[in-house]
Length: 144
Image 1 (cartoon, rainbow, N blue to C red):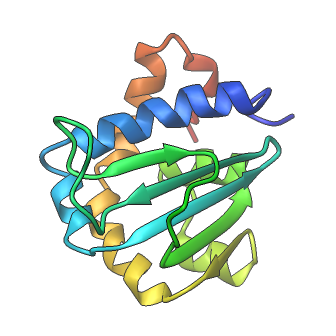
Image 2 (cartoon, one colour; image 1 turned 180 degrees about the horizontal axis):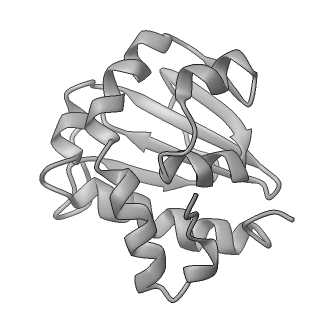
Image 3 (cartoon, rainbow, N blue to C red; image 1 turned 30 degrees about the vertical axis):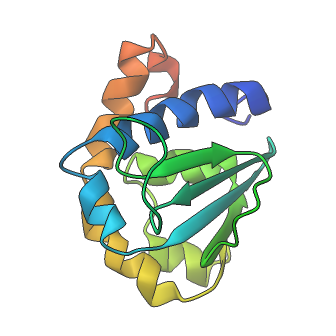
């Protein structure tokens, strides 16, 4: 059974996460150092999110912009995966290199740019389950 029942729930949950990350003074500036546009393409359920860490943010209080749906912005890196894989990744349960090797995540673009961002996003592995609990979604928290 998938973690997210539909695109709306996916966007609500991961959208909240990305909104927190883009404004986090410890995480977002480190992501922006990469000067990269990353697009995540999710399936089961479908969803597309683009993180623009290459240009100055347009939203007050943010270090980068996050857009859902189609955008007129060419990604440097495109990452395609099932939404369940993203959910597990943000819990720190999926190793990126292993997921790439197993084709659980399909990446297009310069992989070294993504790998450089891994240390920057490590705090999200703690932030995500805490956020789910705050949202009353303890049912989505992975404990093992």
